[in-house]
Length: 124
Image 1 (cartoon, one colour):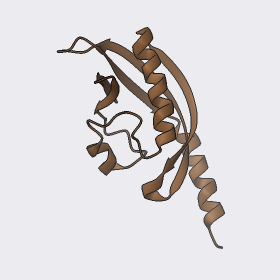
Image 2 (cartoon, rainbow, N blue to C red):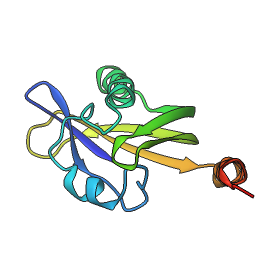
Image 3 (cartoon, rainbow, N blue to C red):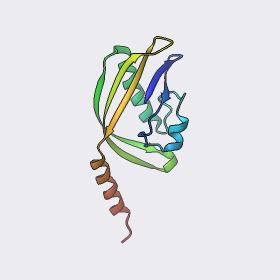
Image 4 (cartoon, rainbow, N blue to C red):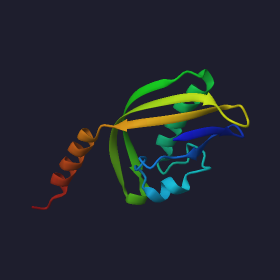
């Protein structure tokens, strides 16, 4: 995810195809949205705060994240475990601090959670 400051807000400028949490439609329409305006607004505000700290300190940040993310369009919540690196850099044009966030998901844990959910939902 690429983020840049626009009128004092951190704004999404690009989202890679690997960002699948909210689905392809949201990903394709996310450019230009303030960071906190994700389908799970509370999660978006939390992430925006972390990106904001990286912007202010201009120091890279590596986190191991374990979060439950609401997906209103899919009427569910998913638990995600991932590592995220946020790198600050100088934006072309306005010279502000832009941010690049890259995440690596632990699909083994994700699959385990999905498998448990499938067993719990199975009527047999």
